[in-house]
Length: 264
Image 1 (tube, rainbow, N blue to C red):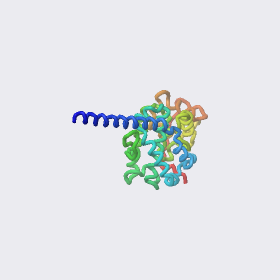
Image 2: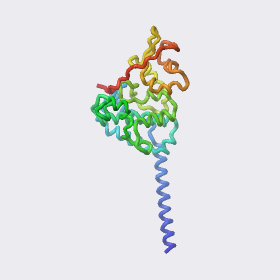
Image 3: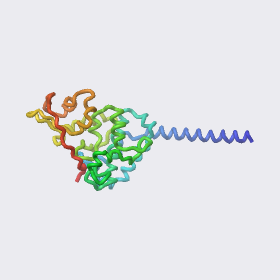
Image 4: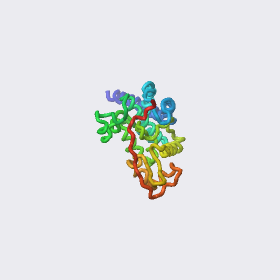
C-alpha cells in the first residue's frame, strides 16, 4: 500500500512540475511577445485624437477594442514587468495611465469634466482627488487607481519630470494627449516633444519680457520639486521659450481649466 501511494505521489509531483514548467514558459513567452509598440492603442489614438482633443464618442464606439488593449495590460505580471527595460516600463505606465483615463471618462460619459466623477459636487471631487483615487482597474496583479501609476510608479521610480507632459488627465488645462502611443525606441524624443509642445502653448504658458513676468501652468507649482531637482524652474522651462527668461522673473501660476478635452 505504501509503495502504491509513493508511486501515486510521484506521478502527481511529475504532473505538477510539468504544469509549473508550462505556466512559467507561457509567462516568459507572454513577456517576450508583449507589444511594446502598443499598436492597438496607437491606432486608437490616431483615429480619435486630433490636436490634443479627444473624440470620446469615437472611443465609446471602439470600446471593445480599447477594452481588449487594457486587458492586455492587466495580464502583465509584476515579474514580467520587472523584466522590461526602464524605457519599456515608462512607456507601459504612461500608455496605461492615458488609456485607463479614457476608459474612466467613457464609463461615465457624457460628462463635462473629469471632476464630475464622484460626488455631485465637482469641487469636492477635485479637492479630494476622487477621480484619481478610484480603484477601477487591475495592473501588475492588484487593483489600482490613476494616482498609483503617477505617484507610486512614474514619479517615484524614474525621476523623470517630463512625464507630467505625457500623462493626461482628460482636461483642457492638461498637456495635449498625443496622437500616438509612447514607445521605448522613441521615448526620449516623445517626452521632449511633449514638454516643448506644452510650454510653447501660449494659452497655458507665456513670458512677458516687458514686465519680466512668467505665466506658467499650475502643473509647475503642484510638482515644482520634480522640476527643480537638478536645476531651477526657470532654467527647466527656458527651452520652451524664444526669449531669454531673466533669473529674477516674477512667476504667476495661471488658472487650470478642468473642462473635458473633448473634440466636438
